[in-house]
Image 1: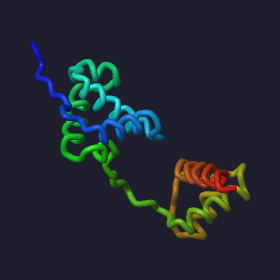
Image 2 (image 1 turned 30 degrees about the horizontal axis):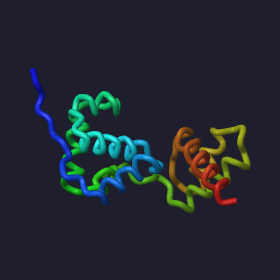
Image 3 (image 1 turned 135 degrees about the horizontal axis):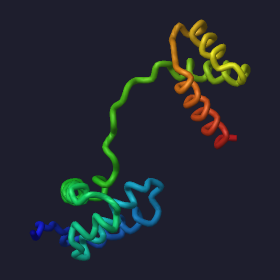
Length: 142
């Protein structure tokens, strides 16, 4: 069965240049992958071939093409995602990391001290993610 195809037609030079720049220099793989798909579509590659090249399902490629047609290059970025709000405030997160780093060998004590100081219960996994986030972002600013 022959599947219908969409193509990006009439790609302006400005958009082509922006897409090439996104494809070659974007820090985010997903943006690079989408830019590549749009460029391939503008060269009349069918959706199934683009999907195989990009390693995604054909419906994903179809959505990318639709978003590009509607929003242009800005449509390549991920939409903001909502998630659960953090348990601890920024100040409490910093305090939790400080507690964890002063007593690194006893995670159960760290969790207890954080609960005592903040009144909020967090898991060891949450604390581990906080430590990783704070220490890796802290190293870049030194």
